[in-house]
Amino acid sequence: MTTVFDRPHALKDVQLHYCPGCTHGIIHRLVAECIDELGIEGRTIGIASVGCSVLTYNYFNVDMIQAAHGRAPAVATGAKRADPNNIVFTYQGDGDLAAIGTAETVHSAARGENITVIFVNNAIYGMTGGQMAPTSLPGQVTQTSPYGRDTKTVGYPVKVCELLSNVDGATYLERVAVNDVKNVNNAKRAIKKAFQYQMEGKGFSLVEVLSTCPTNWGLTPEKAIKWLEDNMIPYYPLGVYKDKYAEKEGK
Amino acid sequence: MSEDMSEKVLMKGNEAIAEAAIMAGCRHYFGYPITPQTELTAYMAKRLPKMEGGVFLQAESEIAAINMVIGVSSAGKRVMTSSSSPGISLKGEGLSYLAGCDLPAFVVNVQRGGPGLGGIQPSQSDYFQATRGTHGDYHTIVLAPDSVQEMVSLTVKGFELADKYRMTSMLLADGTLGQMMEPVSLDVGEIKTFDKPWATTGTKMQRPNNIINSLSLIPEELEQWNMTRFERYKVVEENEVMYEEYMMDDAEICLVSFGITARVSKNAINEARAQGIKAGMIRPITLWPFPKKALCEAADKVKAFISVEMSMGQLIEDVELATRCKKPVLLCNRCGGVIPSPQNVMDKIVEANNLGGEKA
Image 1: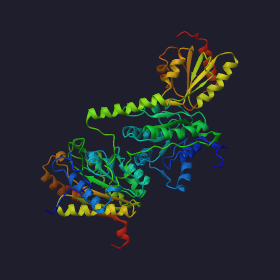
Image 2: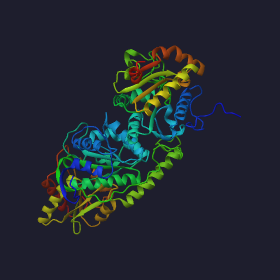
Image 3: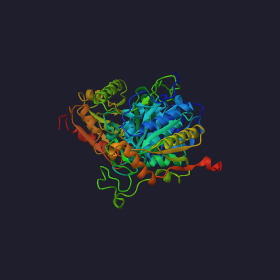
Image 4: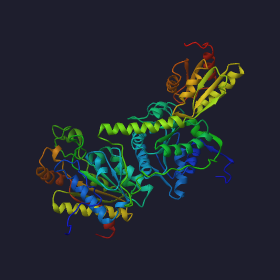
């Protein structure tokens, strides 16, 4: 018999703790597939963050470091500088990366750290039970914005790719989504490119993945996908926000 | 540096720490500017980029710097950061994670007056912070030099202890020691290194993956981790206590002091002896583990203790605990960046001597 579909080697054969319909599982798989295909498992170091993805250290079959909330890019900086031949990636959610870890995010990009950041944006704090995130949409109802996010009092969402596109040190920034097959394939292409850029020493890459949180959005998995398409993608347009090397090649 | 390592060179405390760290095999430094420790950062900025594998990075914050330390330590390499009091507060989060992850690290605190932004003159008011730490059950090895020479030897020792016990060692200095120049020998002897099979160096597809982590959602498991860690701490307490006794053979008044105030205390003790008062000193060199046994034994011989410190009474609590309040413990202190004068200490010695050995 020929195996046509199997678990990537870089993803451990263990049960994930994610809720039904959550897209973390897809994103984990894409990262692991890229690690397999690039043949870098033995020299990859993953940095887990704080939030729903905190337990990624149990899922990836590579050396892992669990960082404090928001500090993953700083830990990644140390790990990469300790051994520049290793491939270092962070896996962070929106609260971790765009609220408490804003300084670490911006400055690791500004320094042009040769690392890869996988940024999962689901517009809510998942692990703590559905509080307003820096990326929660205007009007979005959460546990800490029970009347909807009021931009007059708590301001506007942080658009990470747009923000970092003005940082000279950043090399590659792309926003993708995992709501359908086409976008999943595109997300994988972006993640692979981000790792390849690091392998080629090209500097700081960040792939923002629009993701769902059916549990805390209070929607079925199917309706959550629809909510992402109707609300998140219009506010957070997909696409390449920066690619220093595509610019150089005149693409 | 001189070719002949036994020859003495004149160095500033902060720079001596940096040079000693390099000699101890540290090639990674992460810091953020803050007075009065900046010479250390500047020295590393000059030296490390010229060395093979040397990395100097000025981080965006103290918080980022300590997390960069975590990254390098996870990779199994010797690494350090340095700061002064308000900056150490910011590193507090990272210190707890280092402990929870059982990672070695070397951290320097060149203390200044506080709280808040405080001042920039010397202080010892981070004693509680250094010996008690931030959230969670853990200990930090705290080394307190009283000279530039000891800053060199304790820096080397600090790296070795950190690796040996997978802990943070903190060199607790102050603005005076950091800024003053003294002749030092840089002959530090053979440097001990330790295997780190736990490090996240990449699996090379040859071993199961290593995980550096402080999280457990299972209470019994987390309890066991803490128990295991404290078994290791017990070994540190049994084997690594360091202190100096000064004129303690026949002492009736025992001063307890560390760092720069121990130097002032020695002057006062000499003066007291000249006046016929039998004063001596136990100088803790490790603040954790604290020389409890030496103090407890001294309590059976002397009639009073004096805690000489640049804080509002922090060291004194450990003296009272260690001596089990068997004898009176007086406080001789200045704070806010003021160093006690030998006369301040002398006055307190006279006061202690007049107690007559009875518990006040």
